[in-house]
Image (cartoon, rainbow, N blue to C red; front, top):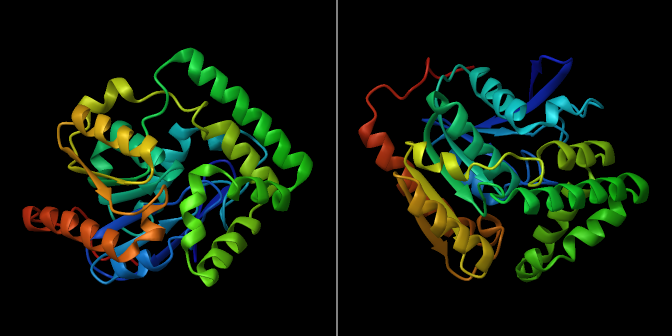
Length: 285
């Protein structure tokens, strides 16, 4: 555990493992730096994995002020987490909410991004009316989390069709995922929705063509909505390609960790062959 102090009086928790070229991991909503399952350890065999607890999650701060939850601020703070280990530039891997955040880093702080891997992610909502409707829905869900508490919310969250393919996971893995979700703080989750939910996030659709970092867009073949989004994004991003993970749903990296690890490692090693300096100050701490 490394707590990185940030402006605003709170800290970002970052977990580091492995050695080699840096790879920043950004988890999904209700997750944490420890919720990547076997994938993180597999990737750490060839990379310095820097797994961040996004604000409001895990051991990171959960400020009452909404400003640190805005996605532009969260992007800068995630980069600060990388810099704390001595790396100026890294590859980035983000899942769902963390994928939107990683994409935002690539669009707004491109010098920090070597290669980009997204799992079940989107560029936000392009239509202003749809975005406002989603913002209102996220606000209502945030209120529900605060009024009913985390256990009731987790019961609801795990019942969503988006996660139905996770019913096939081993019992021990499902229990670990649930325990991780239950460990969250109601205020942190609620403010995360208000600050960087899909409704609050500015659309990145008109910036996709400017993202030059080579990008791998993963989605489970059984996650039809995000598989279609991955294809659409790949068509708009000059250095991107979509890759569908067989027999997997939204959390493809949890359902098929070995397959995703092989695919991601091969993609990252393409970049390793092209780099001459590794994009870092050194091995970091």
